[in-house]
Image 1 (cartoon, one colour):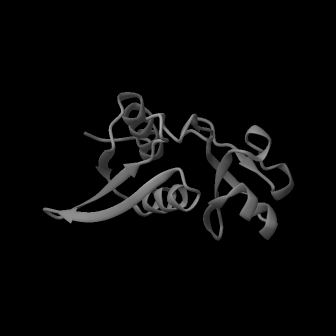
Image 2: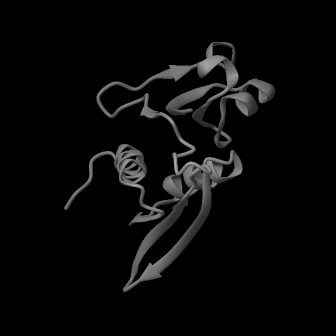
Image 3: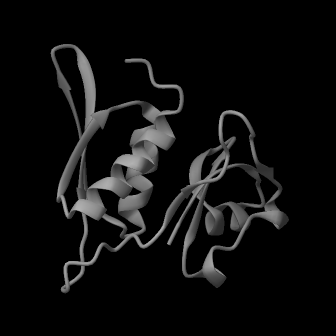
Length: 132
């Protein structure tokens, strides 16, 4: 099966797993997805990230986080820039998600980072997704 948009597939897997209350999910890995997952872990949205090889293919295993009432930590996760319509922003125009309570993830020339780090470094880029 050929995937056109790996990031959208990853976000959909996370969204579906949290709706079903599943703790761990697996998906095919890429460097971009690994960077995105590590960033979500640093921001506290997921519990663990593990990359591994199986029969010559790379996979990614994510452990999702839930609160004490078994509600998912990620309330909303959306793809912003899509393959049909790319969304780029300068450092001053990066979106603020839910008045700063959420995070916009940006692909910059210096790697994938949050909107706060991109603003601090004064660099813009492609807005990949928003998480709240």
